[in-house]
Image 1 (cartoon, rainbow, N blue to C red):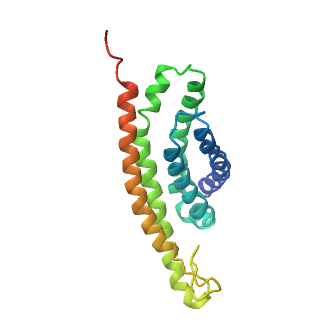
Image 2 (image 1 turned 60 degrees about the vertical axis):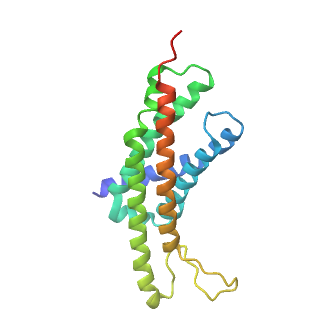
Length: 197
């Protein structure tokens, strides 16, 4: 199990870098260099950045210690999606996309999107549990839970990250479902046979 934790930790370092580079996709979408709508790219990147940097990065040691397998699932599902998506985009730039890659791009999401998103929700559930433990310890330590701001403070502003995580998860479910249906619509358009003469 220690090898799994170490390997997951090493893999996460690469995923952090790759996810930061994925932010360039927003610029590519705005410049029409990739066939991806900006809002679809934004929601995916914002969602991934949130779970990766606000949750996993900030609680990496605890998550690796107790949930290394879950992190591995997240890495695998995200990687499978990207190993198809980016070659598809690259070959599409040169109008040289092979048929099998088009088929894979519009088919691989069917199992990987629900599995990846389910893993993300499970990580949010784990993080929420950690926040509850931190909230219970706050009376003793005086330290609020991760990303939580208690009042009173100089800005007269309070923020409860646990509540935000619940609301974010509910919005993410609705957005994910809409994006999943959009991908099926894209699939039917891209994989349908061209109309006959």
